[in-house]
Image (cartoon, rainbow, N blue to C red; front, side):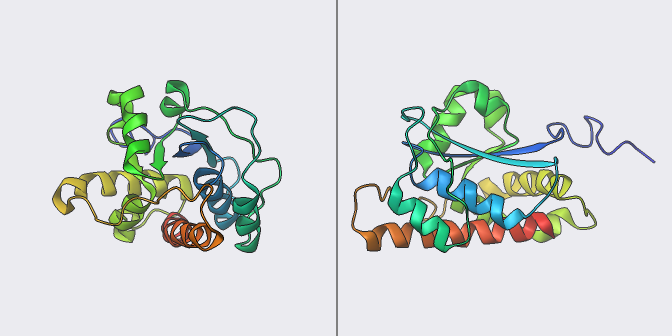
Length: 198
């Protein structure tokens, strides 16, 4: 039986499988997505890790209180969420980079083109391109995640760019805008978690 972790089979996956959520300040969209996906994945052990960062984050700034309240409503835990700045090292340590908007995906790719080009999407783009059959027969969540990234990447060009792939920044906007943003993030996170968990 071939070694499924050999480079020829999984050229970029190594335990744990790391997901990096990215937005601008790392105060609203990306920490909400990070903590919500962590909650939805349950206890995957040491095989899956989710983090977040911001392209213009001020390190150590607490999560936006409106976002934290919405996250708690959705079943996520905002405790201890503080901002950190996106770096090339964080990008290169991730197996999947999910930007809140195209600008965040592009920022990650600029930091490490060779590494991030096939692994970076917007959150909603990745959810849209997911197909459960890409991980058919695979039971381990981290391995499933790796196969889902491959599948989504392979159809990105064929399916083009969706008109609804970006999540607008709700920072400082009225609560209804923040709630709408949280709903759009939650919708994508639910789809991703269900695919990863099989």
